[in-house]
Image 1 (cartoon, rainbow, N blue to C red):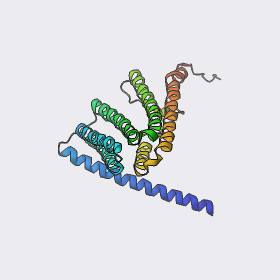
Image 2 (cartoon, helix red, strand yellow):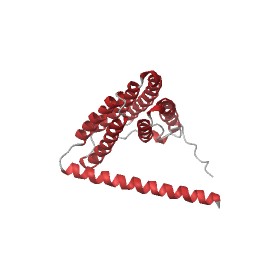
Image 3 (cartoon, rainbow, N blue to C red):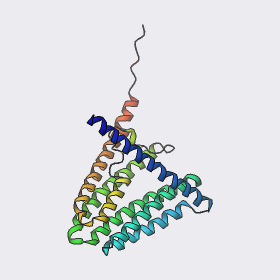
Image 4 (tube, rainbow, N blue to C red):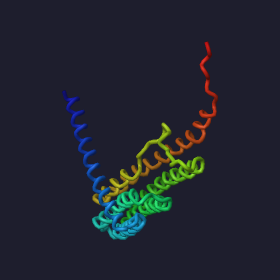
Length: 231
């Protein structure tokens, strides 16, 4: 009975989270359509959101974590809106590039801001987190370059490998960590170390994935298939 109760509670929580996600997604979809009809471009929203996000660095350096959190949330909201606008306006190669590049710059800037908030306590942990973050970003971007070169018409897809870890140390986890850090900034060191370790795990996952997709998978395709003997 206890086990079935736990399973039921877990399913209930999952259903609520799914409904909440669908409601938020629907809101962004409607807002994106309205902004598109008003003639607002996705790239403009991306740039404005990035500039607002940069203000978080200033607020973090002054210890004004509430204002920094506000800028971070606005930045992430604009990041969702630009995707919703692009859904109706049509995605462009430059738009995808701009969105990804400014996202990486924003996250790196926020890490820098936390280092400035308390250099004696946060600098080493921030450097470690930046090391892991850069490693994960570099492996993902390098993978995308080779995948695109090998098969330009298709979108690079790393999830086809059994070694890929999906969303580990990506947008959702990083955003949650940043929100927590703005609420309890004195926990920056342990949270930064944990997030840095997750980033290294992600980087290793992508490297193994690259070896599987670029070396092992082509070999398997090139191997002649054993035909069943004719009777």
